[in-house]
Length: 95
Image 1 (cartoon, rainbow, N blue to C red):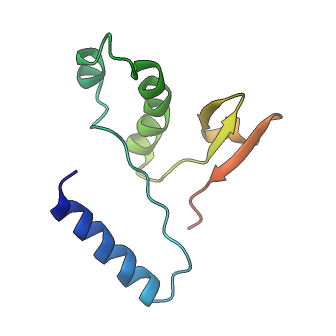
Image 2: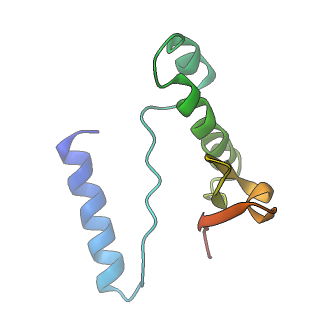
Image 3: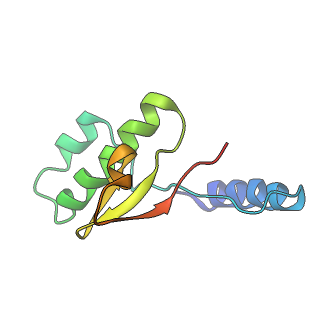
């Protein structure tokens, strides 16, 4: 992400907070996590972690709404799994 993009995000967040919004969730991924991009990352140290993140990335891409996010047994979980035993919700889009 370039400095110019970070500046844009900062400006959007600042405007939302100034307009009365109480919080702004940011979902950041290391790259556009297409199947092709993931395949190109084969053998990378972070591949298992990125594969876990891709589950949430794919849910967002399908619905265009951030999915519920939680931690379960040391991994991120997304969607309905967040409400299961042993999971702690850490983020959720409230429209």
